[in-house]
Length: 85
Image 1 (cartoon, helix red, strand yellow):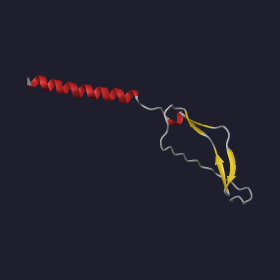
Image 2 (cartoon, helix red, strand yellow; image 1 turned 90 degrees about the vertical axis):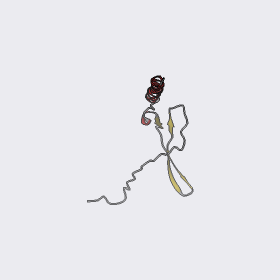
Image 3 (cartoon, helix red, strand yellow; image 1 turned 120 degrees about the vertical axis):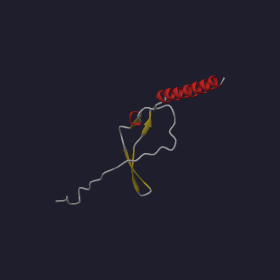
Image 4 (cartoon, one colour; image 1 turned 60 degrees about the vertical axis):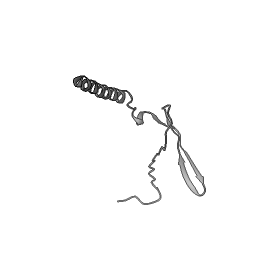
């Protein structure tokens, strides 16, 4: 009886491990960079004394993003200032 109990416990642990590995493999998300789309046009607007650069960003996935954050870097070169030597 002890051998039968040990065999049952071992098979339950082994089955749970294989099911966990299988589920982790099939539920692997796509790369985020392949599902995010940027608009082709940007808009520059002035509001409340500040100049804003506005673009549209969309996610092609069906689920909603929660606490999404985006960072945009803008390099501005002033042609009136002298260029460094």
